[in-house]
Image (cartoon, rainbow, N blue to C red):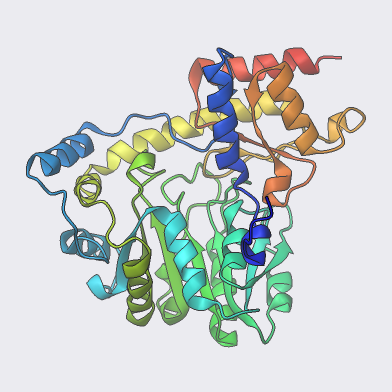
Length: 380
């Protein structure tokens, strides 16, 4: 059937990671034991205090429509972490993904350009296209920002530079002086700096996480996006937020009023409880990820060429040692799923051809078994 769909949506590919989740569910429904090293989902349980607060909100009947921009108490609490901000500078969204999607809708006229360093998260470029914009992909050097290349890419149609640190999929963490340099370029050129900080809780040694919000002179041109999904293992709650000048937040609120209305009310009460957790709760998880990273990197280097990640919970090994057997990361990922029943994501989805993204959010015996399976099928 020839459906009259828009050219815009026909140009958009499904999310590579979300699509893989559906494939895994189908394989498991057929009784196939698959180890999932593809999806970036923490395996830590949601803290009991978060669950209790969410349950109590349900018991109190807090299941009605709420303010479009988020519960006032939650916005007030989030603003406390951002000097000089208040409710007018915060919007609560259905995950960081929706915050980013709405930002591009608000910032992009047709043909507007968003500069995106690569490798990058799968949805960035498609979200820009859905807003009528044009993603301008700028390769990094050894997974670190190439400042000169970013500056050279800025043109008359550029509206924003998007950075993501700690980075998905590379695990790179950008040092303060590099972020400051990108921020100054954006300020001087009159373009926005969008800082995706979904993994801000998980720098794993080496460079320490640094937010451009720490530089006061950048804030007039800065938009920060964060999420509860990774930091608090609250992936199913779908709570994210953006921090920006009041005019941007007001525009986002207008859009969200037509898009989804409020974010789930009782889930927001869980988010409030998350913000009151002791720092040691998150630090315990961070240290666990550091141990996993060290072990995962050791196992990966026995099979692939790979850089040591400094943050998040991903590795991006090169398939170069197997160039004679596989033409692409897509070929190898499909083969590993079929032969080893281990799921990884082709680097092509992240503009990293010839690579695989592996998540060490899955830990312990499962991670060890996943690498053992790959080693067995890849052995000469």
